[in-house]
Image 1 (cartoon, helix red, strand yellow):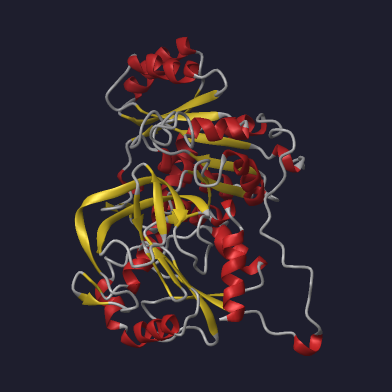
Image 2: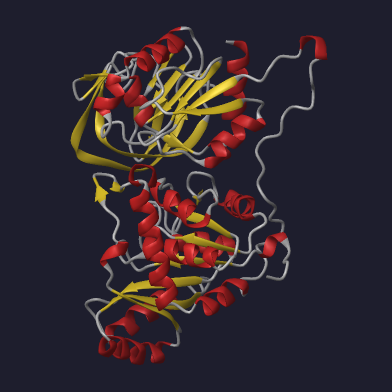
Length: 463
């Protein structure tokens, strides 16, 4: 493709009238189909979800990145997009929920439509046509005309039953003035298994995930006009004036003299199938702050990486792997020993459960005097929070936005020194700050507050 200015990356947003319409199938399949044609594809996901970006990464060979106007602020959406899309031929952005669904009670904030406008990106609307024919024109017309600043550049009809059904849909959409860019038949091979928190992550499926992405790519290649989709992406034009790629916080320019220079502190980051929830920018920020970031797998590794000075245990599914995590007693003891030494430990959601005394009756690390268990109720939503206690991550009073996404409970919900005070949607305290440990259910995006990573690494140097 012809080289374009950095702020004119060809791009489009894959959206839908509602969840369950087929956005992930189409977006992932489109990414994989374009990558198979030799294009460098930049994958993105609107909202806080961690699982879809894993499928995007498998489809493109690049890190899947999130664009969340609530977590990071609207002003960071374009810079974070440009950071991820650097050097790419085209970018595909998968939306979240329905096109106009955003943060509850916040209008359009963090909706797919909001992000599309911030990126000045055309929208491709994926419509589940399985139970309609002529009515599809009214639905598409409504979505295309609701907000004049949102450009719906085409429609992909999903779950079409037959040639006759397709003809009726196309005839109806001719009158709506929105081109049909693809027609997909019902296809079982592209279905991805789900459980209590959504799709099963790529890291847990192995070859099955590879096969599923290949099936999505074949479905999209066969049923969509790829040339027209790329042409639509190339018509996006430049991003809003002044947009520049986001970069991790730079390493301080002051360097100690060689005689006293020390090795960078080693930060161990939990990975593997049990801990798959992480934003790529977190490790980039840690590295930029001067840390050596090393990944380990709590399911398999019996020791922390040698020389670990700090520990980050993010989100995932420890409840699914509770038996295996509990059986790895040497690592549990190593984590407890590190925490008791006062070393910085940052734990989010799954990490919080792992640090508890037990999970569903099985022994965990015992760093926190708390017990975790599965619950009937799903806890899900954005949160406006403020740090209650000074910690390895933030000074008291630091305000951050985050999200919760879990079907477990921890008792008690907070320690003597809570991690966060929730300002909205309800006022409460939550989490634990003990010694160097900061453990909480709240997922945050550190790009919104780079000082978090710098403070954590500095504590690793001095603890």
